[in-house]
Amino acid sequence: MRPVIPYVTAALLFGLGVYGVLRRRNAVLVLMAVELMLNAVNLILVTADTTVRAQLPHGGQVFALFVIVLAAAEIGVGLAIVLQLYRLRTTVAVDEVPLTERPEGER
Image 1 (tube, rainbow, N blue to C red):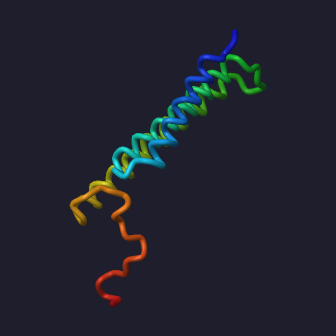
Image 2: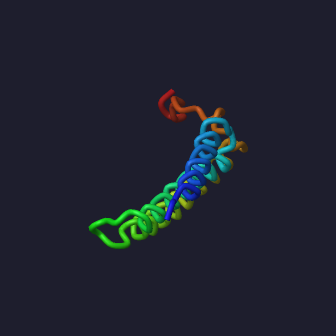
Image 3: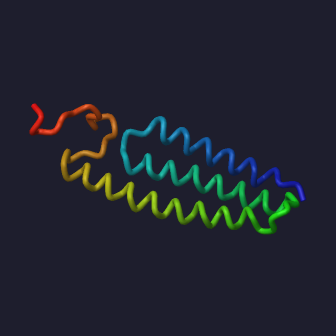
């Protein structure tokens, strides 16, 4: 079997994810782009598991399940952070998040 199509599809998905992370300003869209990259990695893991003979059988599928669990946890924490950011700033633009702001008591 020639696994060219899944690898090319995964590369395109990963490229779109990188573009989304680098170009988007909305935090929700950045999270979606990260999920796109994780799905591309899952596609590569499952394709490699079916095409490459490894010493650990079904290792790629196990790693893909592990990545799915990590992605679910990541999106839960990420959406909680975005929701809190929206409550504090009334915007979810990542460019407007001050990274060096001091708390109110230290001024």
